[in-house]
Image (tube, rainbow, N blue to C red; front, side):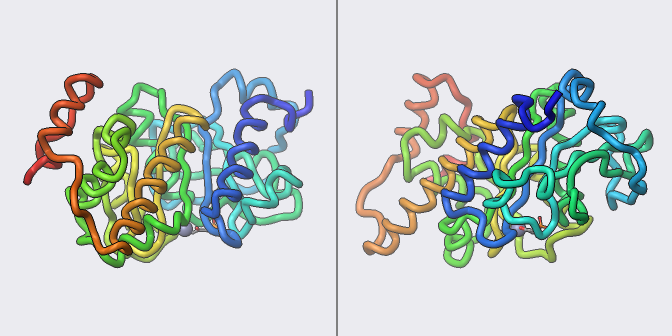
Length: 273
Ligand code: 13P
Ligand code: ZN
């Protein structure tokens, strides 16, 4: 068994490279986690070691007890993952109480999992419950255009959702639930983790004002695709605003018509005139 050749590992690594090339991950910016399937963990357990210490997560994630997560390391560069996955990634095990983790694989030159581990695990906690275990991927990135918009638009879910939907017809089909916005907060801790998880109860996208974005999805393609769609829409909006603003757009009634044909439910709170 070569853990680096396993398909979950290959899929994870491919996304880190794609996301870096998108320009979403300057320096060590952004981080990323995957909740492994039991059979994936079983298949690679021969590569695990258990001598590293249990450490406090900082939040309680009871329904993740005993689960394994593949996670990027704190301070590690997304662009280096493909060159040396074992030095830049780790697999962490969650203890039986859902309050501690330990590294069982990776970070071969030392280090710890991403400083945003509390937010990643709180998001997994919420999404595992709400999707019946379907969602497995949480991606955090410093997407340029989404960040730029947080300096200009009111920091309201309704405003960001509606503006992003208007910039590309497919957007309400890709994220019909909308997007949530967390006001500026100190990153890396419990408070921002709880605020983000609260939004993840409604949305698959949480924007951190003046910082970046978190996306949740079932697999690597869906999560990458969601972030790509949101960031592209934000880029169009930045261009439209730079050209003097909208002269015409998709109307609330257009969205209602689209919802019927594409069989999605668009909350009315995003369709006010
Ligand atoms: P880490 O290097 O600890 O993952 O932090 C990067 C980041 O984007 C913090 O929000
Ligand atoms: Zn960040």
